[in-house]
Length: 256
Image (cartoon, rainbow, N blue to C red; front, side):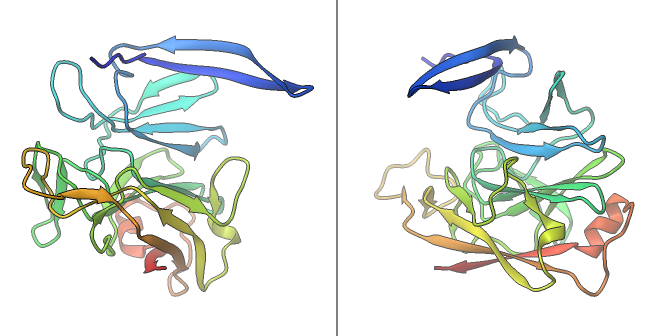
């Protein structure tokens, strides 16, 4: 039996003399939209300057064993489902990173591998649907622009094997809001962190077979680099199509 809280809980922790106490506790319940678990949640800087979080995808929808596709923004005043946007290329907890571009007022959320119902056929530019939600090698990014529009696209690089699910991204540059500052990164290949742990699978779909060791705890550690694009510069107010063609930065992986 699985019990979902269907809640967002907010509180502060006070330390005094070695004793911890919980204060300012509140809970917002939403059985229609917060009935989800094993999602990725990333810190966000919204276009109006507010700091908050976005709850991405997750499992499972009410009444059916399929992942959510919509996302939920969590702001100081409360939470709202993002209208008119679906996340197709990642639906389960995985290594992820938040990258903030203050010059363009643009927020990038990057997802490394994991599980996904959909993969992108880059030749036909169409989504391929597998409701079994297999392991994937996809590295995807969701960009929130200054006009508050959001676009998801597949990065050119992929994970070298079927891994990333339940892994963690550990940044080398830490900030209080857990966001990497793109404008502080020099125009060279810059190490931003490492991907550690998680599940590695031998096949995309292993949940209905039991013939051997189909999945195992990954022993790989990946260094993650950002390479900024020097040739095009930064557009002040890019359209989604421009963002896809300009590629503000590249992600590169290196096995440690």
